[in-house]
Length: 182
Length: 185
Image 1: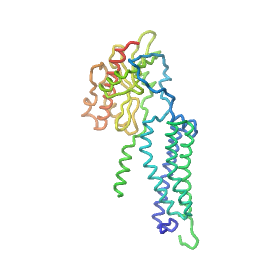
Image 2 (image 1 turned 90 degrees about the vertical axis):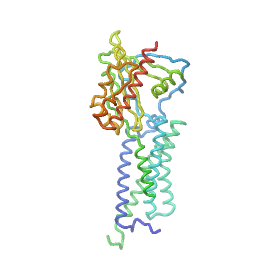
Image 3 (image 1 turned 30 degrees about the vertical axis):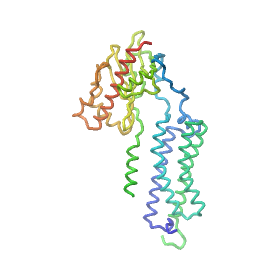
């Protein structure tokens, strides 16, 4: 294949470096945001996506009024949870973007000197990670809290995929090659 | 091809609703709108299908799980007032207003409790122009017109958000008039 980042024009290697750097910043802030809103443990992720166990709402025959005492503390904001509607919106917005990011990282993979099986594996990992992430969120919401582990696996897989691609690309693009002038 | 891709990216970015920003914590809004209250009570109105439909038809609003929650503040045995939180979903994300009512049944104050990263500056501009002052004294049956009153003094987007906040206050007025003052516990 002609496309080989090890021997590519310096401008292309710089473009790939900037792209990976930008994704890296985005991932760091992504991790920060996950820490703020969902956490990194199965329990906290399950609590975020499963939500409180609510009985199915059945409207009464006639309007019913119930009054009870509350404290100001009870009026404070409840912990952040993602309801079904918000998850629909999140999925709609994020899946295309994750697809574009996975495609961009896969384009970098294609320019690396790797055995074919490793290339297939990395590209599969890059696309599988967001699928796992969102499949885990939906399964946690609809099936069982234990599927929070799938979301966590997806998130770590995203970081792993990015880390491998970045490390390989930086190594192959910028380390001096024997017999090649800088 | 590339331009189509960029256009799709731009659309995705535009459709991405920015995160919610808490402008005033709910307990602080309650303290501001029910001054002096020492005890608080939540009055949950579980709407029947008919009443929920009526509310939706009148002000395009369906409270979460079909339950309207009013908070009443009391000082000793005297009612200090009541308030209700109302969420308005806009294309730029949700805003939430807390609308407080005096014991006489008029609006005593309005506090905007939530906006989004995108709408916060527009909401703040409308508030700085005195939006909520125009709501004071309104009673059920009246129509909030804060946006119209400010339209020549603020930008288009703050005026748009003022219109959304008018909608929230209108919902509160109808809900309070129909299901708080009109209901029996």
